[in-house]
Length: 332
Image 1 (cartoon, rainbow, N blue to C red):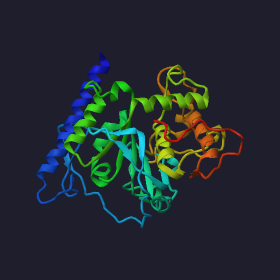
Image 2 (image 1 turned 120 degrees about the vertical axis):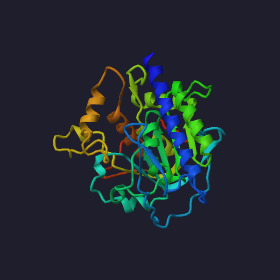
Image 3 (image 1 turned 30 degrees about the vertical axis):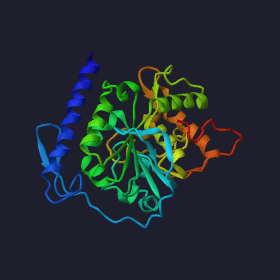
């Protein structure tokens, strides 16, 4: 019962945010853009109070190689039209949200990539020097939808060419009118038809669950764990990109060293929890919902041995061993 009430309230919040998008859009005269940078309103901690936001700085990025011919990626379908995602990139920068990126000055290197992939509501404005400024794909958890909408001035207004890929459990993403997250995404897409919004299909979610079990021997549901947004982002990247440069992901054994670098879990939340403390607490947890962050990194290291995946900041390379990955490109 509590879950239904929370979902209902969350739905109202999202609808309110989406409605505010349209008010901003309709109030702009002579500007054909969906979200004019010169005019916007933002929800504060109180939904009834609003304040003006400064324009998002728009700067010209580096010359990017011409995008390769697009191909259909099964398992990722458009909201409303249900068409498959059609996209292909040569070199991708997969930018994590890790505090490892603080002070890295990798931004220029990241922006030289053909496609740049980010997660959830991780910002680039004010952090360009370390994380770059362009975004081609943003993979978002169902639980992060409202945070993305709250940060719409940058994440949506300033990224109208970005492909958004949302993932979530079937109860939230079902298309029969009962999936509260899917309903809100459908409303968002109907009101803002130029936005590129996709969801990971239920069949694809099940296959990625099974893949986790094959790679680790761990039944995700049986162990009360959730796959992380990082897991889905890596899966997307393996199908989308010919080469993946991952920025900010530590090796699986990083936190076991007493001399490991202490950084915040998110680069944009310096007062937040310590990264390794978060990884270790989730990995050791056996009660309630949690992520298997370290286990997932072991899988990613394994995939990097047989796929064109490379890790930077910190720079590391998995040892070469004779292990075959269960990952198959194009699994729908």
